Length: 335
Image (cartoon, rainbow, N blue to C red; front, side):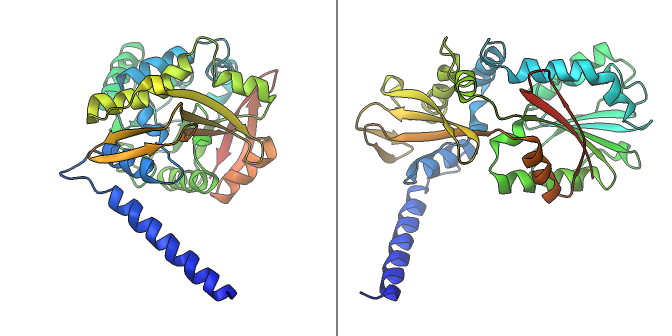
């Protein structure tokens, strides 16, 4: 058999696989985004569920618990960096500027900056959760009664309409939490480019990025002794059972965190403990014993690597702030 025949057979096999996966993604009625992502993700040969579906009410509560665990250093370390350098960061912000936070959530870290930014024109938190925005707006309005707070409900990964009231004012972006690490490199560059388009030329972006470190410490942060991260991961299946009527047996899956040295990232999985079949919205999804569902990756960076990443999206690294142990970094970028 010649080389062209090999390619032809391979292409035909790929086409059959793609057709089969596409048919498995068919869902009757008008499915939710979660339903579509679940069926399509579990229909692939390498099963996966996007990490954005972690955060229903129970998932959000579990994540808040994770941030307080002794093993989970990112939240408290980034908070300590922002607290230590809040005055310095405020001095970088021009008078009359607008602080735009991407994926604001509860906005708790933002308050450290707002306390030092006396000359802000407005604070614009962007999040997909109206409830989170309402809670944050109420709390911030109580603490900073003279600050204009204009929430925007939406997905900031693409074009988004900002309030007309901020037109003509300098813009400063804020993207804490090392959320950038949850994206593949090409997607991270695309997101940073989208932020640059939203903020405009000459804008500043303050962004958190987790750093590479001892693998044992990384694994512990994503597989804590109390099992809270395991519960957080398994809640994806519990949510599917509750919202979509699937029949996952949670006792038949376990949490696994691994470190991919080649890509410099933590990967989280749900592992099937036995051969089983799960009913998912009219589809029978088969699992082999030991088969994994990928649920999250979290890239870790070194300084040079992160600087190169942001440069591809049209940003320049202006300054890097870190903690004494070099666990985490906060970067000040200019567009």
